[in-house]
Length: 221
Length: 202
Figure (tube, rainbow over the protein chains, first blue to last red):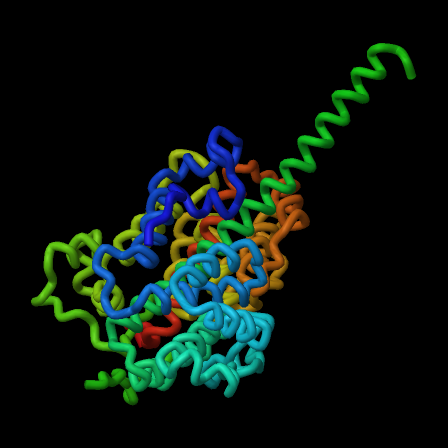
């Protein structure tokens, strides 16, 4: 499927051409361009490989949902909705609700950092949704949850579960990049939105000060 | 045919954060170096990366690797303006410390020390963790990186205000956001596709 959005981060962060954030992003033009190229490589790949578009958008919707970023979740869910059965989107939404915890947690190799170990859940797709999603997507979602919330618990055994569910070594690389890239994209969007919000407040304060100064100058106070 | 993972029972994984040079072993078979095509070489960006099992593994999907690497380089190496290199590396180190990526933290704490000449302060971040009290400016950068690393994301107007009080302008704040966000990408690949090996010296 094709998109008419030329820069997904701008779209999700609400950055308008010519705005101050637009100019700030342009100071890192290669990063800006390649963040978009990354999105395209993962969601509109020239060489699609064996990870389907439905799998890519289902996992992206899940990852965005786990971050509680509603507008990013809706963005990926809209593509999923076009590609898959509506019940698939419903299943992903219900898994987001079940899987939403707080991270990062996880264990360190036994040693001085063991005191910093933080326990957290080992997420499993609900029995109700297993059949609807299929074993390959179930394994993909479970791995995505591990990467989102407790990547330091990763292990060869976790990768073996993907291989056993039909993901090839190359598919696992694509899946890992997809979840890791989204962890970046979602944070850039949240960070830039926060900066835009803070700047808006500051500009409003500055406007207010100007008005107030103007009122003082006019001698009407 | 189902493929299998690689295991390294002889490896003794480092158990503490360090600025020493660590190695890394993959849990999946890297792409065979002798079979690299033009598209793979483009994905690797620098030909020297064909010697790294990490980049050879990622080269299995070369287009995303290429875009990832170019994003990384501009965020960290484009010094035409914005945040000093040392503080971009500080953001990368704080993010890696928070996620628990001992390998990433080792690389980027070394860079933070190299550019800041403040090895003892960098080591305190590694030893004491992300709540360490270093100075106003470094504390603000560490706190911004850590709140951006939390899921759900806790970064907001409070952290931006602290960065401004510490003297950062908006271009520098964007560098903190980009640097910490990028390491949420890098940490997840490094942590989940293989394991670190002890310093070469020991």
